[in-house]
Length: 69
Image 1 (spheres, rainbow, N blue to C red):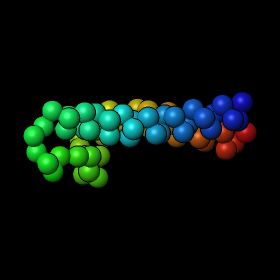
Image 2: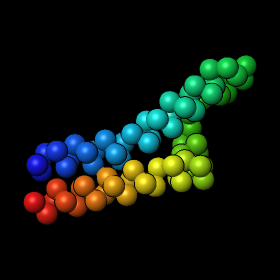
Image 3: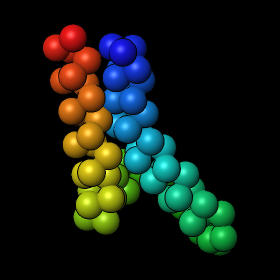
């Protein structure tokens, strides 16, 4: 059960970051600008933080549950 909680925590914390990076790179695929790419400032966007808040909250809860077992 502890391993399952750790796996869920890792997935829920990492998935929004990977998805948003993929989405930003996909948006650059149709751009003609040579400077287009995934940058660190893309992850400080308000939209990203609102979308990632719920999975991160569940990820932290699963991490706390795994640490207490």
